[in-house]
Length: 177
Image (cartoon, rainbow, N blue to C red):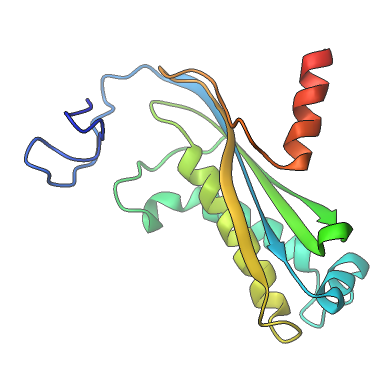
């Protein structure tokens, strides 16, 4: 239930609450989030060539992102624990920007959405890249973390109007299908 301010995580007196979803129907829900990390040339090449001293940067970041999605409710207060049915984390190397884009897709059949799980997944994947490469570049910048798309639930489909190049390509493909 949304109160006068439109926010659902506060009661009438302004106290934080966990939303009661017990009466909501279970539906299939998906969320896709993305973000990127800008790195220097040495880090970009180490990631791309698989030569980072700490090992497989993207493989480790992928696992960290998946683990993050599964544990979102332990980190974000008021998030419901959800039985994640699928979580994938993919990376796109962006040579012209000396950056890596992370994209998480999370699915669940449940009473509430998985937007926070997708955003948490991307955030932790990018933080893991930072952690594994900080010896080469402490000036890396994590940026543009956002929800690209969500489906399911009462509010239906959300598609971010301005997204990354990767998302624009995906939209063009969807429009021609």
